[in-house]
View 1 (cartoon, rainbow, N blue to C red):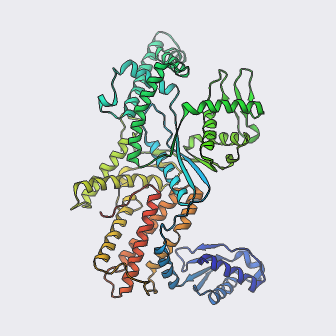
View 2: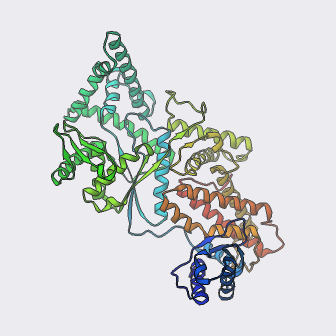
View 3: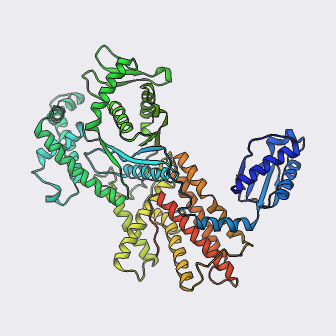
Length: 593
């Protein structure tokens, strides 16, 4: 029986014997840091049965538990809070147990299959700062759910069709002179994005010309020759025109090559790609079926809607009067296709909070269509990312390019590492690997330590600080621990046979073991909340506690050899928890720094 369960059972027994009160469980909490103790019971719910004040009730319970449970060595009472002190011997044996569990904190895989969607870009431009938060968050939540024992499939839906794609295609045809990623040396997504910008320039110029000829602005926007050509191209694509489809496949191919390079640098991956060009037709078919079942309704103009006013929402269009689909139609088709592909139990959509309403509607529609898994759909909604003004300029001056941001992070990591002398004596290849690891670690940690729902300010320089709640601080601590463990091995001190008989723990040792013991629970909580921030900030607390111990106690030079072995065991388990926690965030930790 685990410690918390044993104490909980003891408290249930105490309430029965002391006050004839039957309860199924008591609420055991971690004791607040400013009080002495390890676990706390709030006694207010039991005062009616005890017919005593809170302090006397807590004293009764405390004396009972100290007398009946060996692990509880003492207690203190603060008003109605009973703080239990767990014996040092228990924490020492907990550390030994942690050290013997392979993949400590990670749950074995169960039967539940969860699908996580993230990234989902358009094929008319490169990935940008918003996509960075999306990808890092989606990937980390997928890893978190895996750690909590779920079967996880990572997917994305690529928005590969529509007028925005045709704009890039048409501009390349008009102004590109046949240039390719190979002929220009540009990444394919950037080359296609360049022509999306070129289209916009030409379009604005034509609008201005039409306005100067006396047209109203709205009329000019509708009648500009280049937009009429783009619409004509879209119509040809939908009709399967061979030439247009060939151009579409070629330019999308360039974009996919570019995306793959970005994903590789970012360290994210996918099990399956879905494409709107394939799923929008299935969505239309399902809408027609829903119409026949009476879930949807048709307007006089032939458009199809769902009325959600009874649910406190509005009416939502699903098919336009000309039979063309909207985003909602495509999402319906994609969800059903995925359920068929994976026999899933639930699905998580990593999409910015500007789409909150869209997903409320989608989830209600899927339930009304009768899909069992619809009740397990979840919108992982997140806030926008801002940059300090002037910190970083993109090529067009409006959107921060993901590749540029990642390169800047690596450059910043290099500059700061060299300034602090972190890479002295390292081979050039190892230095470059370290700069990339620290730069990406800084970026990912800074993005993921913030609650996903919150809008955030990302400051590249602040994120690469080697002090404070940052990725590099955690990475540096891991490297420091690994250095100590290497020294312990070299000197033949560690690992030692058997369990050290060192059981009179110092406060900083107790604090660190207690934190490590919480790791499995932290993973479960973070997975339930779909929040990597819970793991990120926990790892920081572990590292902070380790550094406090490192400052206060001699690890390699204590007179007591048993203390040295215990502290090296504690260091080893700390490094493993840090490594596992950071891996869930998609972050590598160095062995040397």
